[in-house]
Image (cartoon, rainbow, N blue to C red):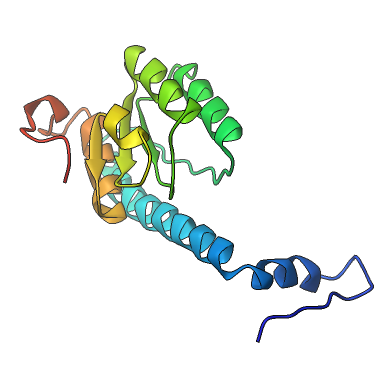
Length: 159
């Protein structure tokens, strides 16, 4: 049963948990986004390790963000990082300013992979993948110098 009252002590950890329990739809959306992010990151990290053993220098970083403006700002910031080669977007609904930011960084040469989500970002991405594990693997293979994989050779943009 959902907690409807909050403790009086503001220092307890129970207060934020109680807030989420009152709105199950928000909690499910957050859980779905985090599950996609974690699955993608785990597989990308293990794939990067395979290539790093062969002499590559691939680093995988994750940043869980919420809100259209903060996510769009983060996407634009990725375009300014000189060593960054690819970006994977895993969210439940992405569009608007995020889509414009994706188009901007793609024009700068950054590879953008998106999970298949609602919104206009998948149409703006280089590749759309339904499985978060596959998104992590494909992205690492796309940036690895020793891989024989190329996004340009793919016949489809969506998997």
